[in-house]
Image 1 (cartoon, rainbow, N blue to C red):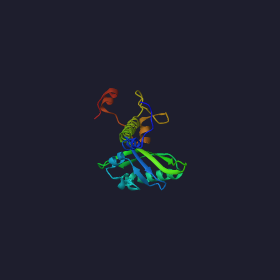
Image 2: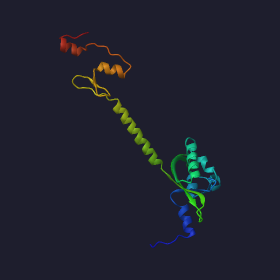
Image 3: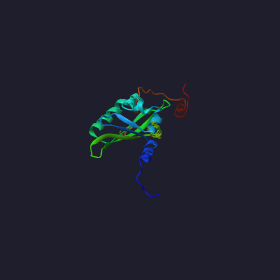
Image 4: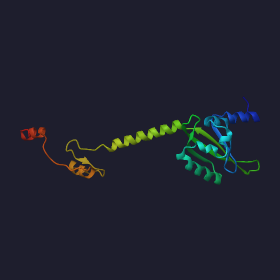
Length: 194
């Protein structure tokens, strides 16, 4: 199909039915537009979302970080990216990847920002699960004690081999006492100690 310039109606369909959430803010940093996908995701009207209304859906733990990042980059007219949790129409919070870019009018004058958002919840949850699995593996490895099979000395973190008693004295809140178990008593001394 040959390329052609899109008509106004085609642009509207492209923006409104795009699979991503789209927003726009004026030079005052207040949002003045959200596409249909955004409004459907949020389950709110354009009137409810414009201005700072959309921020009512940002998770309270992410709100200040999100706002600071947005305003800092807005003032500098820099492209920005951030992730935050945004409440969906069903009340659940979803992780959103938000990318905002400054836009300019035909005379090159700063006119505000245009942004696009994608739901990245599955990626964020997968990364969190992977991090938890890695931390559990590290904890498991940290519990291993390198011990000589023959003499039962233990190698410390500096690579030195120490008697079990010395190692335990440095790494545990315990003191070691000595005795002879019944098996060793029988094997080495010929009698079973009570």
